[in-house]
Length: 322
Image (cartoon, rainbow, N blue to C red; front, top):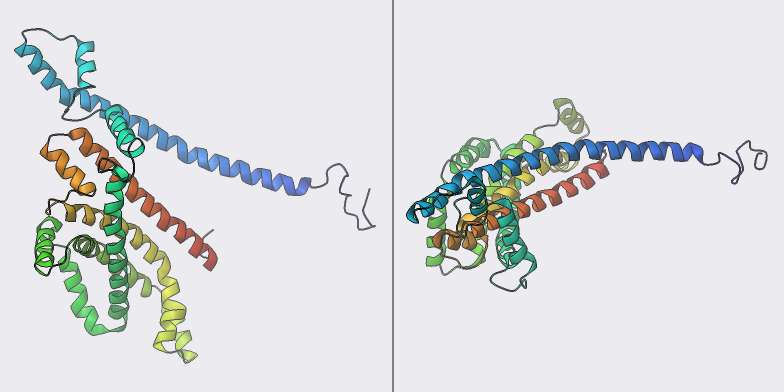
């Protein structure tokens, strides 16, 4: 039965809308298969890592149990040995469930304003990370534009930018802290500068490669139309550099987090993930150290995921990503 003589099936006719539902069903099935194809390998790798972690914890913590048993002139069975290595107060390598329990206590069981909360310390570190990341990304982008458009900067600034990354951050971080303290600047800014120092270089390299990625024919076409250098930059070079820029930003934001944590170590800070790592090492609290490390890794993954989401949205808007 047709509707209005158009030959199209009526809305209530059998099979109406099937042509639309079949592609939708295929799309959902394909997405489900893709998600399963990604999730299964990840779960297998995670399970393997947990198994190796548990075996390493048994092996590295067993010596303390055996030494205690020798002092007490007693023997320890295999099951008792394994059980003790999983429950030591200050293990050489804490078991995964011990780290999970510490994270549960310091992330979910404590008020976010408490000094025992890893959320509180993570926010302190993330504040310096984001400030330094913005400074480093802006500086890197500005240097990249100057390097591409000025041969003198290309020959002078780029070698110095490369040479700056050969200095170990553990050596330069105390110098920055001391100089900033001498100038009366403390708190967030010195850590942000260290983060910016680590994050600007990936942006410089990525942006330079991206700004130089347009082909000669594209540049010649714009020159034929009489485009100025600013128009070439805005209409061709910058759009072409965006895929390179986002890849660089992912590296830079992770480096900025490392810089913020390293910046907290030489100052004897009492706040931040670096401070948690430092206090854990002072008092032999390896479970606390590992919990702070896991939270730092989660923060880095979250920052990279945010940039990846922005990347997909921007490139899809430009028609460069599907």
